[in-house]
Amino acid sequence: MALRVNKAGKELGVRLSFVGSKSATELKEEGKGKGLKGAKLREYVDASLRGDASTAAWTRHGVAMEQLRKAGAVPVELDGNKAGTEFKAKFVVPSVDPKAEADKIEAAKAEVSEKALAALIAAGLTVEQAKAALA
Image 1: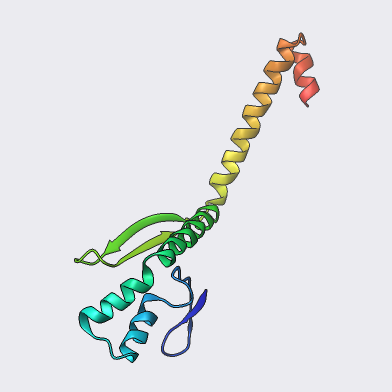
Image 2: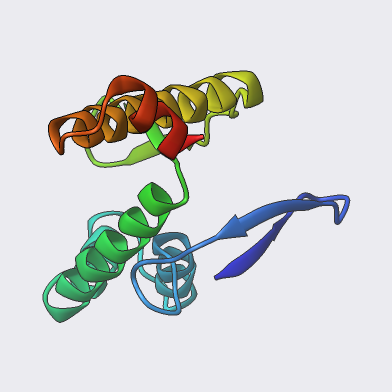
């Protein structure tokens, strides 16, 4: 995981690379440094991302997506370029409405109380005895 910063040095967040220690951009720069251009450069980057590296990248991606899901993130959109060769996904973590959460808890408590009351009545207690036992 790498820290993302803007040109002024302000921290923007983090970036997780699924293709090992080098991103596709870094592989492209590396290929340019070797004098590769055009189709040869694309072939160099593609070859670096295929095979075992590709399988490992998908595995790391799957683990990361599961962690996002556990953290409450929800996928909201996927953007792709016209050529269909690059994509970016956007996830958000919805804010929690404390009142709505409290209402859910109260509703669950009421449901449990009703079921407990019904179970005590089914066990032979009177309604008054069951209510007293739950109080």
